[in-house]
Length: 367
Ligand SMILES: Nc1nc2c(ncn2[C@@H]2O[C@H](COP(=O)(O)OP(=O)(O)OP(=O)(O)O)[C@@H](O)[C@H]2O)c(=O)[nH]1
Ligand SMILES: [Mg+2]
Ligand SMILES: [Zn+2]
Image 1 (cartoon, protein in one colour):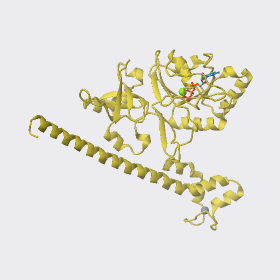
Image 2 (cartoon, helix red, strand yellow):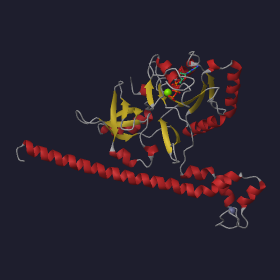
Image 3 (cartoon, helix red, strand yellow):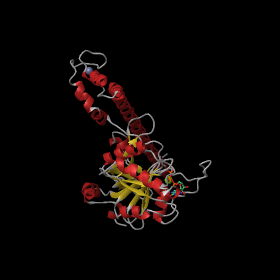
Image 4 (cartoon, helix red, strand yellow):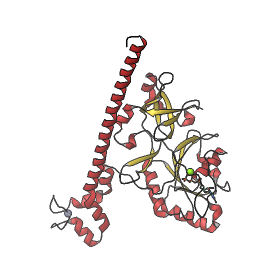
């Protein structure tokens, strides 16, 4: 397995040159758990590794931390040492969503992806509003959007065609395919995208068949997927972590745990940008310090009254500054956590050193 088979290219090689001089080796992250990472090396060896302090420290927010699909520079150290991620190469693309929960920050689901495949079905999972959000997120990330309407075996052909038609109306660029993993129908479509070095990520709700598709492409039992009890919904294997796999015929696939809700992430500039039209109006208000709440000569309120500005959007705009403040507050909190972490690390190192000196003394019989 060459580095190119893993998605390596000249741009990465150029970025990596100074790291190679330091004796670091390139690797692609294939798995991420709460405590460590796994990475693939040239030749196909897979090793566990941990995050180095510098990478952690330099990350301004969670989205800057290494994620599955990232290219990293590894320090293998001496025999028995932990392998450490010393550097993370800039990504050419990343597929993100809003972090689950209250935070509006970005969570990277997959890095350096060429194609994002959204899997859905023509039945219970079918939801045009959700699909719209997926397509917007893919557009933002710069990858090619593909939609699979899976489980076609469960529905009449006409129903599937209608559903596919509705999806086609959502986007001019997304490629829509009807598939049935159960009947091995449409797998060739997916295979067609999977050229050596091309990275694809599968996203979508839980239970739509992402892992079943990956399994079939791998030609065997990779992650267990089993029959659903249609009544209880139990007895099925749900993917619990992201994983990148290399297919025997070439191509790389990242399977994702199903997400219940796909939401937009945001930062201060995107937030402001999304209200650019309202800000343009604000610039025309009579007073520069207009609060847009009953002030004389307020163009924004006039627009709401005339019906050219949606009242809900107006309300969101009034909350904009609060939301930005909240974003920055979270960022600040994270910075403080990072500093605490670094302090703790220094303490542990110092203690280890002290222990070692003590031990050496003992061995020399000085203690
Ligand atoms: N009838 C039918 N069932 C399918 C098809 N594809 C997958 N299934 C079934 O749907 C269930 C869920 O499939 P999975 O592949 O585990 O779904 P998933 O998208 O990976 O789910 P999460 O890992 O929870 O996100 C399994 O019981 C599969 O056998 C299909 O094309 N037709
Ligand atoms: Mg799965
Ligand atoms: Zn105003």
